[in-house]
Amino acid sequence: MNSRWLGCWALFIKEIRRFYSVVVQTVFAPVVATLLYLLVFGQVLETQIETYSGLTYSQFLIPGLVMMAILQNAFSNTSSSLIQSKMHGNLTFVLLSPISSFELYIAFVAAAIVRGLAVGVGILVVGVLGFDLTWNAPGWVLVFAVLSAAMMGGLGMIAGILSDKYDQLAAFQNFIIMPLTFLSGVFYSIHALPGMWQQVSQFNPFFYMVDGFRYGFFGQSDVSVYLSLAVTVFFLVIISAINLILLRKGVKIRE
Amino acid sequence: MSSPSAVQFQHVKKQYGELEALKGISFEVEEGSFFGLLGPNGAGKSTLISTMAGLVTPSSGQVKVHGFDVIDDYRETRRILGLVPQELISDPFFSIRELLVLQSGYFGLRGAVQSAWIDELLERLALADKANENTNALSGGMKRRVLIAMALVHKPKVLVLDEPTAGVDVDLRRTLWEFTKELHQQGHTIILTTHYLEEAEGLCEKVAIMQKGEVKALDTTATLLSRHNYRYLRVSLSEPAQSLIKPLQSRLVEKEPNGLVFKLEKTASMSELLSWLHESRLKVTDVSSRDVSLEEVFLDLTGEGKS
Image (cartoon, rainbow over all chains, first blue to last red):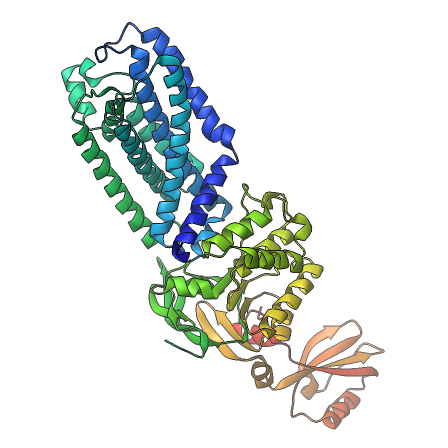
């Protein structure tokens, strides 16, 4: 491997080991919390909410919950790692190394994808074993899982770079990420919403990630899977560009 | 691209809003030298050092390390440079050894040779018995050792130490200087900032004294000391002095319980001095002289000693 990419690889491994060292908090706890959603909402709303034909509500719910967990955990991984590194000062070690802004970005985002997928797989295992979940197009499942985790990992990096303290990061997470994920069609098909709310939902980029991901399981979706792919890629490109600008300018990490 | 200089600062300015932290610094540090960067708090030493490492981007001007620009050729300069930052840094997730292995990885270094170097660093910096401990559990002195090991993990040609002995015990200070001298003898360029001017005087071949973002003096340590053409004379007395004749009054710098300290031109003759002491009817028990120290040169240049 080229020595440049060895540096990027080392940083990626460091980020993996960082979240693995607290795996109960970073993987097992989100899996259990998400399964509780499945248990409670699945039971209570099983007969209340109309979904795609031939599916139980729990079956419909599982891909949405998996994607929600992927999004939230990919975001948490980069944002918490960056802010902790800034607070403890150990980001300096990376900044003093020959790792470029692009390599730093790739390493952090790749680790966020791994954590997001680790949590997602944990939930999916229960879904497949317990709820007879089927895979219509596993390729789409993987594409949306990876791209969405990358996008959220990138968003987490922006939040981590711009935040000076945990309080600011919590505000970003609770007032932006949480509402957008909850209102992205995780718990319902947007066709079940009144007309205006259907239109509002279509301005939420997370909706396309959930919808495209769900298409991979059921072969059915609220909007075209290609539209969902285009929106996801578009936001990934925008967020990557913002990250690279922030990292190259050294905003809040170099003076 | 080749240059005999290890580091070149060319008209380096750094502006933070209204504050001009660096006011057009220009000087060179020769390859293989032991260089001291001195100055009071807020002089701009750490800012200047950080421009070398890419932690601070100059508002204007250029910094080169071994002929490479620190911005355009950052990969080369960061491989050449090792920085021990002033602030203590920790990582709650990893042990000391793990941190050193990871840091090596950032430089693309791994394998048996690198492992042996990490072992040597741990041994030399007396960290071997703590190698598997988390940095959060370490004392300030131990954290400082870890920072030095981290800076040396890629065997940099230029080692920059920003106040490395601040808050560390005598034992570590000695260990650190022995190790640093050895690195210097092996051909490494060492750049040091310190508040302990005796250390700078003993170690550094060349010194820059900074104040308020400017270089007030830059010369070899010996020249800086010799440029100040005076010495100090301590006269021990068996009885307190009653009065002094004019030539002594003008040269008196300190009154001690059992003696007086005079600042004399190096050209002043000793016999003339003894006659002044005799004329002042002083009961002299001992006379000792010493040359000016770097600290006194520093205080003279920066005005820090004036009340």
